[in-house]
Length: 259
Image: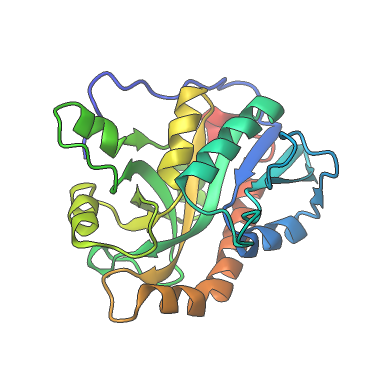
């Protein structure tokens, strides 16, 4: 899973204190504990186009202005707007509207016991890639995988004693044999439905982004994925909430170069 030749790293302003954070969270169940923890309020005057379901919560914590964006409920079906399309769209729109210094994509993920993951583990992501964009043509195949490095946070990772993992992203909750093969090739410990899409947009617009993922289910375990995910969602979301609080506290008063 080596980085593609010629891929440029995100360039941030290393000496300016971070003041404006954008948090992208895909599911309402994952978002509301963070909203409540930091006493964020829903923006009644959305900065987004009329008719989209995307929700902005905002507030301040010490020296930080926090914006949390949740893609909202699908207007037709009423379920969380999960997946790469919604995540890419809200990330792009939020960067344009809010001009963040830093992006945090927080959420739940599946983990692989073969790579040492257990339910409840919290990971900082080192690299993101896709596992379901198969384009078997030279160079297009690399584009499909879309490998990108997350913004490195060595001080934060060490201080909070967080595990580091590679993330693989796809638009399905279950895992096909082809997906498994691609995830293995990506050397991923965790899989989700948003991360690599957020990373793609963040790199395009040159905003540093990192990823916090909490394991709800074991992909290569004995339980059906959907059943285990729903069973553990509440407790793992609570653990994710605690981790996000610690991360935000660590970031306060620091420059990106100090992360």
